[in-house]
Length: 352
Image (cartoon, rainbow, N blue to C red):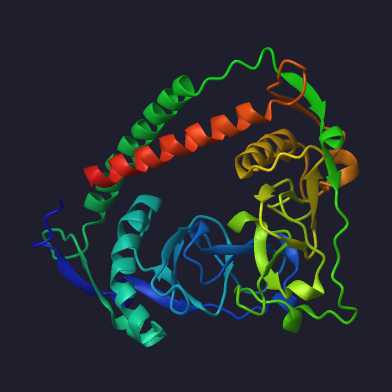
């Protein structure tokens, strides 16, 4: 616990210039490699990768959501476009990554109270007061923040490394007697389409799952299990107990997700279904992980992850006495890992 009784109070505007982001509609977005920071609480605020470069902000700045995920605060270490739901904080001091990482959670904690009044408007953000450690002159003690966060990061890195070593030892698997299988011998690619001849994404899809728009649709989405939009079930072909492979996208190419529920395909992805009747979500998750580890390294923005190439890749899998994929082993393995994860979370909660 840090003693903050001797800390000083500062308006955000005292130490940062607060600059509003710029609106960029999805219709105007061009796929590329530039980070687009939107009103998201995940993935450091990044929601897309774009090619648009007219209104970029420099690295070594901080983004704060004033709308949507109000108060979410992230340090940005590369050039980016900030949406109009985001304000960008330009430091008036010599900011390092460590000092930024110290300040971010403080700003985030102040900003959360504005979630209850919907938005953290620019003027309110400028005048919001945060508490920081101070030096003898009463100015923010950046040296203290730098050294404190450096120590925290070093300790975290040691803990992560120790955890990796323990995990590698605990879950080491002997694969010497596993079999090799061609992806195309195990899976068929499904042909799923939108049945609506005059389909218009602006009115026929929703980013929020509702009673009307209830069917998950796959596309070139990194994270969120490959789902960004939802459609009306009667307007789309769909299938369940499938695996989603992202074929295109600056970052998402080669991502693979298990889709046990009924799912349709929007674009830049496709669904494959196992030729064996596996009937288990655990096995589906296992196979999705194996396929991604096999293909992700080979495909990217300049080399699309199309089925004609993916189906020729070889997978190493546990086998039964007949030399067939050992589906029961995969299910039991995934169940054990899930139980171990739940136990670890329970122990962590008790410790906290």
